[in-house]
Amino acid sequence: MRPRKIPLRKCVACQEMKPKKELIRVVRTPDEQIMIDLKGKQAGRGAYLCGKVACFKLAKKTKALDRALKQSVGPEIYDQLERDFIAVEDRFIADMNQVDDDDESEA
Ligand SMILES: [Zn+2]
Image (tube, rainbow, N blue to C red; front, side, top):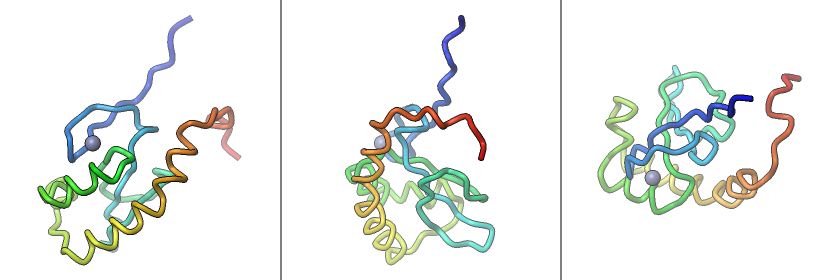
């Protein structure tokens, strides 16, 4: 039996490669909205960040999202995303630690 391949993505802030599950996706939608995409299903250009506020703050400081999303991200958008990030962090960590056995079954 082959081990299941875990898709890795790079955090745009700290540049670490991590399993997708442990990263929070930020997406620029086709209508140019920038938002957190917890399910990772939103269409658009995505950037990944570790699921912790420290990495978000680093991204904000270094404007890593501007580069990753190829769009200038205003300070008010960073502020909004930071609030959203903090709001989803607990849920995200809880989900990450959950055993997901319905991952493969498309409803
Ligand atoms: Zn990171």
